[in-house]
Length: 162
Ligand code: ADP
Ligand code: MG
Image (cartoon, rainbow, N blue to C red; front, side, top):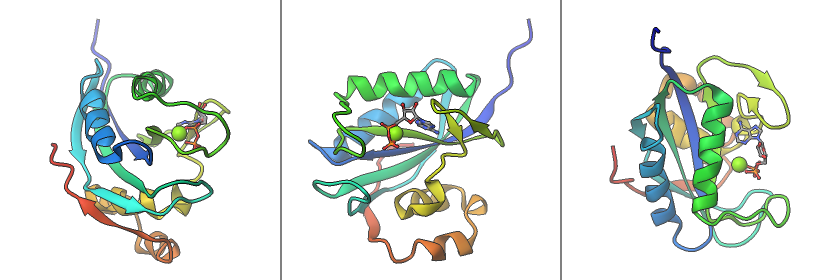
């Protein structure tokens, strides 16, 4: 049997409850521990004001992984990590202990309710585009960065990982 080849994927992380920076660092380690996932890069941690949401500021980051999992399986593994972190979904856009979004999976385009790729809202969000630009500048044209320049989002800390 030939091994399935690896696909490069980008995962957005966000949290605004509990200790968000700790939640993100722990989630990054968990992502790297998924069988069939190799962590390649992690952005710094960024602080942003809630968008379409409420509660304290968010901490956000983006990681680059190489994976042999298909996209739905990768999302399933990500959702298991959200649950481990105590994620609840009492209502849409509720504050969260951990949110993991699959932003890009190679060049895949998928449109289903469970999984839409590229992530449908990524191009409107500074808290996605700034960390993504930090680790993969070719993926984020300056026009896209300019479009979200008015949103409050700033470097908060090094992830201290990868
Ligand atoms: P959001 O991240 O939009 O605030 P949730 O994390 O609660 O909201 O996700 C809602 C649903 O979005 C999930 O049930 C998931 O199946 C679906 N979804 C669709 N596309 C994606 C994607 N690219 N990454 C993560 N979840 C996605
Ligand atoms: Mg999500």
